[in-house]
Image (cartoon, rainbow, N blue to C red; front, side, top):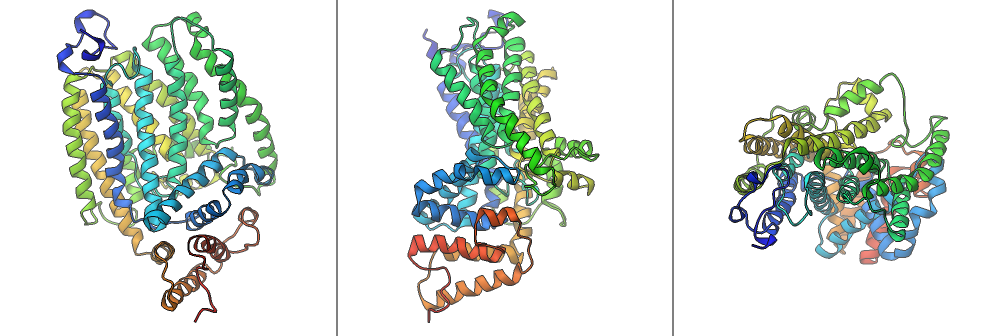
Length: 546
């Protein structure tokens, strides 16, 4: 019987526990089903947010980065590196992260250009795609830690099968700073990068201890330097990789310390650190100097004040769906907001869960040692990621104000890490053979409630004057009316924007980013003109047009 027609058990200790070949079929089939669920579960939970209005920098950056890239692609590719000295002066260093951010905005712009989707809908589509990537990365990391054989040659474990539901349930619109609402494409993909690096390192664990060859070694050092030049979320990739490799080697494969120290994966992690630290240390020193005067970019600043511990407690539980629900539904009563999208989400989740339940009866369980390794690795990145978020002044202020569950840029990574850690811990401690099925049922109900909470958040924010205005601007850019009436509508929208944000703060950081602008209104005028001139050869609003 060939290896392709039988399931190889990965966590059993005796031959008696081998799963019969005819119970599961080729390993590729359950993997295809698992990847499909990793895409559809977050889609179902996030679907109620599809018309959410752009906020904060999204009101400008899609038009700015998209229009400028289409007109000057080489300049846009070089811009994140050319502006490194300027950003360092403001206490910020993310050249590769900014390159990804611009790429996300360009993808949104292209959807708007090709399909005539308004920027608000295109933003949500890109964010949903990024959430799918994050969910798949979380599932692959769990399997990379626990799988004893080759990754795609054996079916996924029960723990990996449950991960999409756990991650999807935590994708809640917990306030305007949550990655589910703001910068989802950027920070979901950044979190996926963190998990992906750890997964690659885990799969490098081998018993032969052969060192890396010259070319992969140089690539590893350069990759470590790239992580240091990405963004603050990417900093967590190496601590996670280090702990995950140790957990896989000791708990799953039973390697002794000497074998683990001489292992190929350990060499890989060491080389990543070797490339990371020479960039990270001087950059953080420069940022500390820039932030010493208290006038730097708050998202990069580290505040080691008395509120740090309190904020850490807040961030440690902020990813839990029930805690996020209260933030998503703040100022309202209950979850239900009407409409068909939450109902559709529930139906999709139930259908997906029915197939998952059938797979759980056929696929191998995750043994306790492997589940514990997942809990240790994912729990480590949860602890470190929330500590990083707690060091931000905004999160310390939110904790002091009692804003439990408020989302931030760590929300995507915390959702993936927290869900994986909790699943691993429960499966490691459980003694009931129906535990995976019970967890599946619970996670489907929680995910459906999260979809309903997202629907409530979308309804709560849809009637705000800012939401109506920003969505109307997005529609006018996507479907450009060249008639005098269309021009009059667009000029009226620009006037309304100026009236809505007359005294909004505009930092020196924002002035330096887009020279020549001194107010949010000027920033809007410049950026939307970039888009409409590139798309239609016309200004967004031409006051002299009859």
